[in-house]
Length: 230
Ligand SMILES: *[C@@H]1O[C@H](CO)[C@@H](O)[C@H](O)[C@H]1NC(C)=O
Ligand SMILES: *[C@@H]1O[C@H](CO)[C@@H](O)[C@H](O)[C@H]1NC(C)=O
Image (cartoon, rainbow, N blue to C red; front, side, top):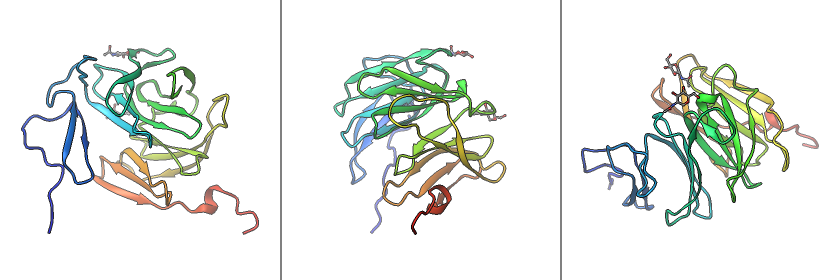
């Protein structure tokens, strides 16, 4: 039989973060469906753009896409705010349309600060600012960020350029400046908005708002990693 999952029974929607169990039952709503806001208690969002859930259950949210809020939160699995940055602007820790967030194995939080055409990096435990990359995305800000499973590359989507870039991840320590290793140019007007990576196979799934489809890309190992001894 087929079960319909994720269907909303109310007419109001948007501006929320929803948690579902693996059966598709809605078990938690943060924010007020249909109502944008700036509150911290209770939490109200304005077009939260994306989130990332760690294996520990900690949640990172970028809020977001609407312009009213320019915030990055870390929430515990029981939805307590552990730290946040919430200022609009161009300085360190400030955002202009933070659109995507991910965490690496070195404990660093990477945020696509789209309107500022840069990626900002934070310590996941303290929220301390570790650096920014602003030299790779001068043409258009990054819309989505995810690491390859080996942690060696950050995959960055640029919406209007219809492009995915593979950027070398810096070792633990200084963030340095970014260097694009390879690009995947999609067809014009495909408009990749957000992406995710299968941590087992390395497959990349891209949500494309221009083409109105999801495409799956399977990485060719030899393209990124010299095949010494193989
Ligand atoms: C945020 O700051 C940018 C410039 O840094 C400005 O263009 C934008 O209008 C500001 N947004 C809000 C909501 O104040
Ligand atoms: C993409 O292009 C549209 C239409 O010109 C524009 O409104 C939007 O701000 C652009 N988005 C980015 C991320 O540059």
